[in-house]
Length: 130
Image (cartoon, rainbow, N blue to C red; front, side, top):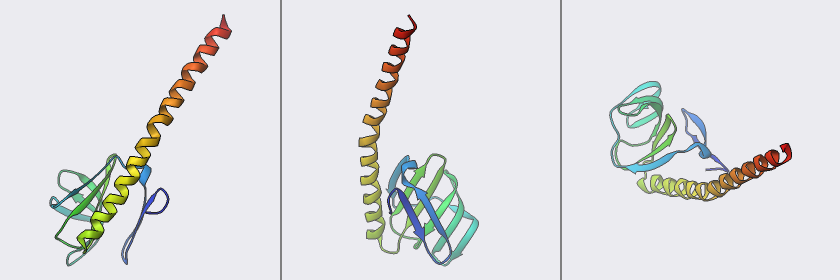
């Protein structure tokens, strides 16, 4: 994670995601059946664009066929990640979850402030029009 970006790099595939676009993140011990659209699948390694049953077309970065899977949902797009080391996957989840909580904490007051400014502007325009 770098600034507001999740950057995933490996020998086969590089991808950058804007973390501000994340709508949901969660961990699961399973992954639905999937089939490759464009990417690599060598042994237990699956990288690239895949069709995932129940989710549709998205990106997989899987280093193992076991363990916990991190689901990152961005509107209609998604990424599913797991590392060989389950702890690394859980740590990435914690970092993203903390970042999302900070974004939510600061986004709501910002929207409230914008809404209040719009109301004041409309009130002033109506007052000046009279």
